[in-house]
Every structure is written in C-alpha cells, then in structure tokens.
Amino acid sequence: MSPPPLSGLAVASLVLSLLVCLAPLGLVLGIVALVRIPRTGRRGKGLAIAGTAVGGAVVILTALLLVIGGARFTAWTEEGESLFGPQEPKAGTLFDLKAGDCFAPAGGLFSAQESEDERMTDPSVEIVPCDGPHPAEVYGTFRLKGDHAISDPAAIAAQAFEGCVPLLHGFAPDTWTLPAVEFSFYYPESVSATGGDRTVRCWLGAEAGLPEASLRQDPGTWDAGQLAYLKAMRPSAEAWFSVPEQVDTDLAAATAWADRMAEGGAESAKLLRAVDGLPARARGPVTALANRLDALSGIHRSASRAPTLAEFGKRWDYNGDEDESAEEWEARLVLGLPVEDEEEDGGEQQ
Image: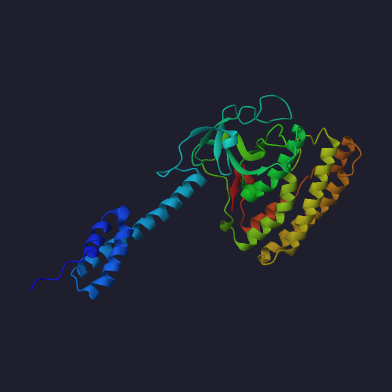
C-alpha cells in the first residue's frame, strides 16, 4: 500500500516562511494546511506546523523591529540625534532651528554695533550637540500673530519679546538657577500677508558659552511644595524678564513695564498665600515674601503713572531696596531650592 500524498500547502508553508519577505504568506498557508490535512488524509502535518511556527515568529520579530526602529527614528528626528548616537555638528541657518537645538552662530551671538537692535544679521549657524560646548540654545518658537503684513521691525520685535518670555518659564521654570545668560530671540524684519517666515526663535546664550548640557529643567525633580512655589512666582518672574531695552529712554515702555511688574507681583503674592501643603517652617518666609511683593506692587503701580522719565526714576527708587531678593532667598532656603551662598563667592547651596 503506497503512503498518502504529501500536502503541497505544507511544503510551501515551510519554504515561504524561511523567506522573510514571504513569511506572512507562509504563515497563512501553514494554517490552511493544518485545517485541510485531517480532511484530505495527506501527509505533512509536521511541515505545516513548522511552517506556521516559523512564519509566525518571523512576522512577530519583523513587527517588533519596525516598532523599535520607528521609535528610534522619531527620537532621532525630534531630538537631533542619529541612529548611531548623538548628532554631529552640521551647518544650517537660523531658519532650521527648532526648540531644543543648540547652536553657534557664524556672526556671533550679539551685534557688535552699539544699538538697541541686536538682531543677528548673518543667518548662518552650526547646529551642535547640547552635551558639548555651545554658545546658545533655542528654548521655544512661535509664529507671529495674524496673517497680515507687518513691515515695522519694532512692532515685530515687541511681539517677539512678548511671546518669548512665557516660553522661557515653560522651558526653565526656576529662572533663579539659570547661569549667567543672555535672553534673546531671532525674528524676521518684515513679513508679507501671503507668505514668508513668521517664526520667532527664542534662545538663551552667552559669549563665553553655556554649560555642556541642556538648560531645560525637569519639573519632576521638584516636590509638591517646591513646584507650587515656582508656579506662584511665575507671574512676578515673567514680568521682571519683560523689561524693555528702552526703559531708560522711553517713558511709555517704562511705565508699561512698571504696570506689568505691579500686576505680576500682586498675582504672585495672591498665589503664594493660596499655596497648600507647604512645610510649617516655610509658611512664615513665604508669607513675608507675599507681603513684600504686595508692597513692591504698590510702588510699581505708582511708577506706572509717572508723567516723566525723571519722575519715573524717583518713584521707582525706593531707598535702594529694589526687589524682594532677601525674602525670596529665605523662602527658597526653607523649601530646599538652590540659593546663592554669599560666603562662597556666588556659589550655590541647598
């Protein structure tokens, strides 16, 4: 008696499963063979099982490699790294920069001319890894408002300044701990209604170079009390960083800033008093800071109504005690946030 014929589907299943690109077809044929063999009485059940197992394994492995490779590619494209490690320096322009990029401009960070406009005129940059020497880091970008044409560079600069300040505090909520850096931005000189680059790029930089690491801060490193404190201080800090370059020469700019300082200080004082869950030892210093911010808010409000620059200076000069640094130092100290140690020449202590 001759043996039953061998199942062609079983043989095809095993052969195709061994070919990576055809493994899905081998998997399907193996399943079909396992269903048909009992009905037809043909041989090859073992081959069909092997073809199904091999085809399934190849399909699963291929899917995993695609997922892992896709995730790695996303990280590469978003963080500026290659598939084989950190990104190498590459030539580019200011228009190529995105949030998180570190760079070295060809023409220097700041204008060599003594003028109020420090806008970089040479767009050439070298995009470099943030974990190495770098003069500047982009902390955020945004588009100029509206779709209309804007031809006044001063109006664009004012909008750029207004938009960059909150992005800075989202990137580094505890600005107290930032190193000595310049807060700046790059913006188009004019934009048309029909096109053109409307993106403002906000960056931190220093002529001597930034630390060899990103300045981005991770909120996960703070406890609940520290995070609540930093959120409460944000309105005051944002107002302070919005100081215009023309504060000594332009009454309208100076009084507008004083008004922002008054509003920001009052809002921070309100938020500080509403913070829950602070350690008992922190309640006194935090309340003292809130009281100081309220007092300064009144002074700033008065300065915002000054009729002349000379009068503005008189109202702003409150016996040389120009800020809330002493009260803020005490509040930060009891909360465990870094503070400057005067006995160690400006070092920091916990």
